[in-house]
Amino acid sequence: MAEEFLQDAKTNLENKSLRTSISRSYYSVYHACVALFEHYSYRAHNFLSRSGIPAKKWEHGIIMKKSYDELVIRHKILDAQDVWWINWLYRDRINADYRYDVSITERMAKESFKRACAVYKNIKEAMK
Picture (spheres, rainbow, N blue to C red):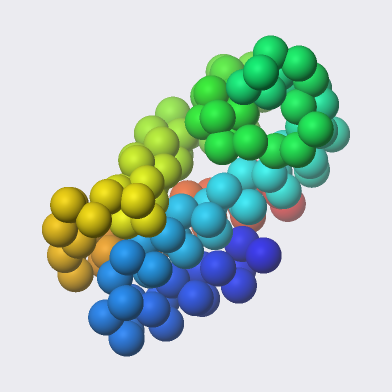
């Protein structure tokens, strides 16, 4: 799914569908992170959900909070900069999907796509 969403982000960027491009950029990285966690034998239920019980599915908050602790500090799989960009992409996705009052520029969409490509590449490398 990560590759498919990254391609969707590129296509939407080319078609000037900027909000959708930003959203797909984030989701490509989100799904890549899920794949990376699962590659290293993590499952959603290894973490607490927003309600404080073991998660039944992968939640955005788990990815945001646990990527640094588990993938950077504990296992040294990703760089701290990658996790910073994951969080940055999430923030932009929220703005693109829900904040009609936030202007989305082509520059923003290009930057999101560029960062998503870089993080995706690093995650793919980490899974080799």
